[in-house]
Image 1 (cartoon, rainbow, N blue to C red):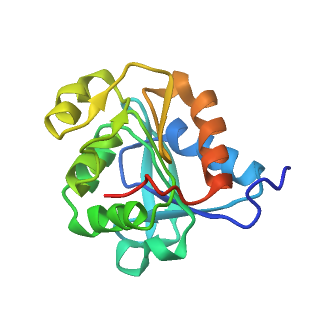
Image 2 (tube, one colour):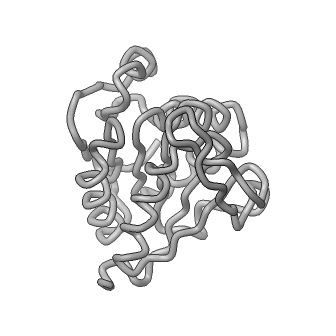
Length: 187
């Protein structure tokens, strides 16, 4: 185990329908780099992960959104799946929590359909990112520039397209979490 981010506490925001590999691989990368990973959901307790359309494992969220504050964390990971970010983007507590990371210039990693939550948090205008291809129009309509890349970094915002991109995504989020706040990471 490395100690690259030994003093960093990283929030993972997810709910039922989260793509299991997009939660597990970044979680492992953060903890193997010495960071502390904390799962946050709309409500504390169990959430159901999925492997595409098949139910996967259940995960336990330590905190619910009523008890989670961006200032208590050094970075944020937003895994995808379709149902997960679609649910989170409709929850004002989730979008407020996400916005807090950008207001405090903290690094954020987002993959696959995760940018839907960023759109509703109002933090993509003027940013460049990648995602699952079907989100391209949504991101462009929200004022972002969309690119088709394995991983893209825009001033502390790390984005990737899908589970195939996880190795590059995991490397970049650890690097950005180690660097800490980025002045360009703002709303």
